[in-house]
Image 1 (cartoon, one colour):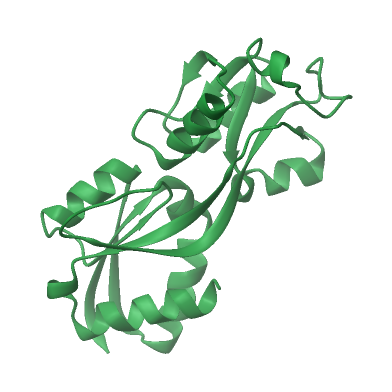
Image 2: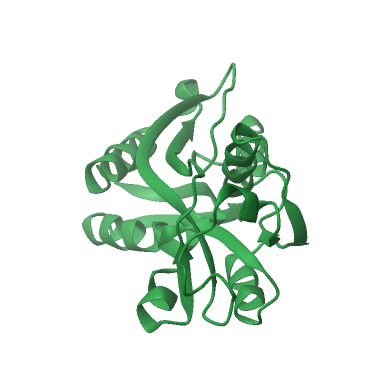
Length: 204
């Protein structure tokens, strides 16, 4: 098994899941050369449409007539704040309080933002978006600066919660999602198929 493996991955997956998966896969197949493009969910799908990647890994729900989109890993978004935030001690946000927050969120087109927007709409709540940022680290640092409340994958804030610099807030929002694999079935080669099977086996 050898040759280039072109992957388009959305930001959370590329930052927190893909490095470990690629390291293990390359250990088994040292002649594989990964080429990773980091984009949001909409951009990953566009990259696969153009045939510019063998496989896509996305965070948001998606449908497509030509591409095959297969759920493969469950994730949960968490609402979080800095320890100095007024709600940090209570550890929760009630429905009325959700509308009162200054939200620091991912950009439109990202899977994370789509899940958050859908969850707020389900409760008929309009979010006051103070900042829109396209990187998790920027969102976390802005929340740490006391400028509002964030919402990101639980994968991205594990260390900060453990160290006590960020606090998870319980909310009535439904923020569970599934990551998905995106492929062009007619264009899959043996290497792509092997990587897909490997990814599925590692993240059940």
